[in-house]
Image (cartoon, rainbow, N blue to C red; front, side, top):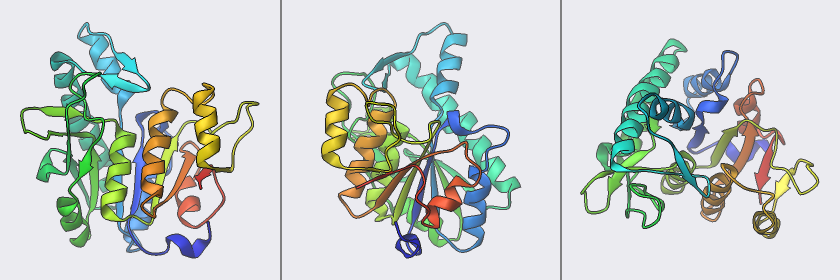
Amino acid sequence: MSSASSDHGVIVIKIGGSTLGEHDTSLSDCAQLQREGRQVVVVHGGGAAVTDWQRRLGAEAAWVDGLRSTTPESLEVVVAVLAGLINKELARQLQALGAPAVGLSGVDGATLSSPISSRIGLVGETPCCDPRALRRVLDADLLPVLAPVGLADDLSTTLNINADTAAGAVASALGASLLIFLTDVPQVLDGAGVGIDCLAENQQQELTESGVIAGGMLPKLRAGRGALSRGTQVRIVDGRQPHIVRDAVGGAAVGTALV
């Protein structure tokens, strides 16, 4: 990716709870980019915190193909933790770093909506993004921080939406120039455990079918591939590396690029 390739346009950054640590620089990078006049959207996860709260309340988390299965009881925990605790804490941290953050969820402005999953409960597996609320926040020179819960298409319930899937939908709807997935590994790995600089669709399919790519990497790659098909550049990078967000935005060959 050349440095000019992401000089303009919206940057969508998916932050997972597992990548946010005491020495993490991702939020400070986001704040600096926003101060420089870039339009940045943060989409966050927080699955570990949801699982922790489920355990505290005596419920066990269940997973299917890297996606959390969600019952009516667990949905209450998901919404409270993601749209409440985590969303507001990230907004607070960004404010402390000098960025005018606005915490939202996909329910607000019907930003994220989806049919209800037929296999994993109250989950929106195929979300669509209505970007109007996000655009208004961006046009006001604010930094939106989006929690991955949304609406059922028929408005009958709130839905849990995988944060990677949500980030892909947001990037596609906004016509983002760049989508960055922050994770806790340096790169996507091949069957021999070697990092992949550029991941083509046929290689991704082979590694998925053979089980090399599994778990939480699956929704990242599915969502990234969808955004790539709409002209967004996509990188999966190690959020633990100092200033990895700035490096990726600046065009450095970091992590794994989808091609």
